[in-house]
Length: 92
Image: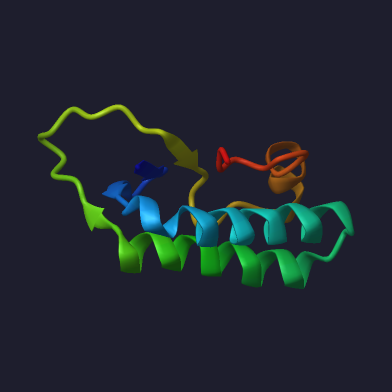
């Protein structure tokens, strides 16, 4: 799966990580829904860290469409309220 983190680039994340990505995405959605900003920040940081640690960065010269697009790391809680709703951003 190709995951793009806006302002950072694309990462090839093994499909074996999909369940973990989904759980973290759901944790972000849950924190946003409950209005818990500190919990949101921790969950979103863990989601981005998983992509960076388990994914292999795709060279910028390669044109590959993204399966998932994650907002930039400094996404505010207010901005997250419009993105992390329902099923979140990770398909699954």
